[in-house]
Length: 107
Image 1 (tube, rainbow, N blue to C red):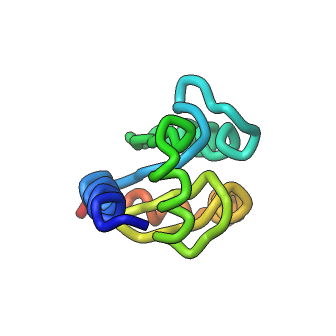
Image 2 (cartoon, rainbow, N blue to C red; image 1 turned 90 degrees about the vertical axis):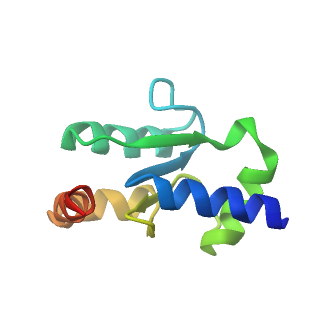
């Protein structure tokens, strides 16, 4: 990953309380896993931003190295990597995701 890509990722993660690196956008997810994440965040009714990794190959590859996580989507809350679709589903079902998001938005 180039230093420029790392700086861009640092900035995105730091400047957005809830951020999803995904295929497509929140209005038009381009894969089922990205759609799962969008649906969960929409159900929580929280503000979040998305980055379409299909628009930028540097970001698409860089984010995998940045998080040390091989798949997309990737969710960051309050600057911390949370996980992908499966982990988000689990956190949503057990109520932890709601708490994480509330803490992030309050800080």
